[in-house]
Image 1 (tube, rainbow, N blue to C red):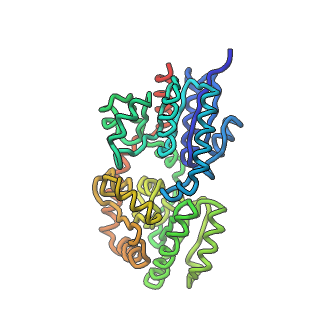
Image 2 (spheres, rainbow, N blue to C red):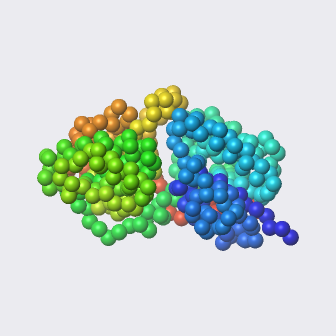
Image 3 (spheres, one colour):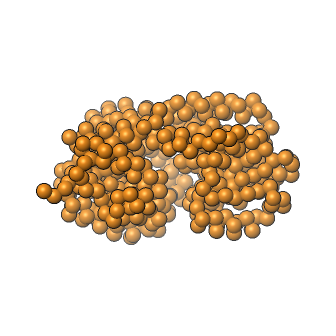
Length: 379
């Protein structure tokens, strides 16, 4: 008898890691045994589960409206290929991991083509931020929604969609990356992001602010978190263009972001997953965000919430300052970091607020809880 297939789709590096951990947990359940696995993801899924998984994240992981439009032809072709592949495999279940812009369209197209299997969504899309009206539509397409934030559960359940709150998957992962280290009162972290475009956009202002702070705080050193060797090449070029006077006080390291989040006393952090990670570790920081003018204009038109940082969204208040678009200047970043370095009461209040937010991320084990919920859905 031919094995039933479970098909996964993730489109970013973080989603690839989450999908691989989810599968690790799912294959150990009764529903996960004697299944074949295939789909699209990144290097982690391919390494663990073989050639049935296409590594496409380098091409698929783009951010921003204009950036997506530039690759419209590629995405259109890929979308058609995936539909054909799923149709040929006729899997027992399709598990969509994050990547909502693509995955929600895929769910709709699958149902339109008559796909009768289960469609489960892991890491609930944040439609509550830009279009809550989509939730009833999603309820018609999906069999199971797995939420990472507790407040989301009620929103999805109102539409009749089976929903489970599993907590945030990063809790367990970040706990495992804890190191025995004390915060250094004289260390500032720079986290300019993991994508080339955001590093090009944000790092120069961070460096100029650091230069000014270095003159005012002679005891302070600066460390730059670099996402990959490829990004390091870009960083080295930017460092040459923005000559740092006392170069011995600025270091750049690849793959050390989680250690730096636990060692630095304060930081600038590019908007994205890293801001929640920094919050988890209790690192006081300022959020920085800059995309193309068109992308930002469209986002402003559709986003219905007052903050962009998840820490602030969860707290429903401005826990960390947000510097957005034209506000990302050396002067603004300097002023906020000076406050974080020199005002102990301000910094400690931020740390207390971050500790409150951390409680809303759940107690760990998200992948296992999600796997059990999917197993129950399939059975």
